[in-house]
Amino acid sequence: MAISTIKATFQSKVQDVWDIVTSLEKYQWRSDLSNIEIISEKQFIEYTKDGYATTFTITVFEPYKRWEFDMENDNMKGHWTGIFTQKGEKTEVDFTEDVTAKKS
Image (tube, rainbow, N blue to C red):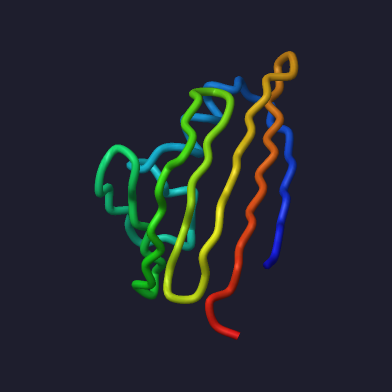
């Protein structure tokens, strides 16, 4: 199991940061992706530029506050949590990824 946490502060409103991070249609800021396929309101598949697929299942969706999902592909299974907090004119994000390798 590997746990990774990223914290950052942006000079933007929480709504703007939320809209960018959670958009499944406007993902151009993600240079590692070639496509996102929306399966349902709760599930989507991300494809890397090499065509590698990872399935995501949304478990928590609290607009402008919290986004969580389970993720799985051939190599790993895990959970991601994103917490969004308005701090005056800035937005603080706290992203945690907990991943377990399927293959050793």
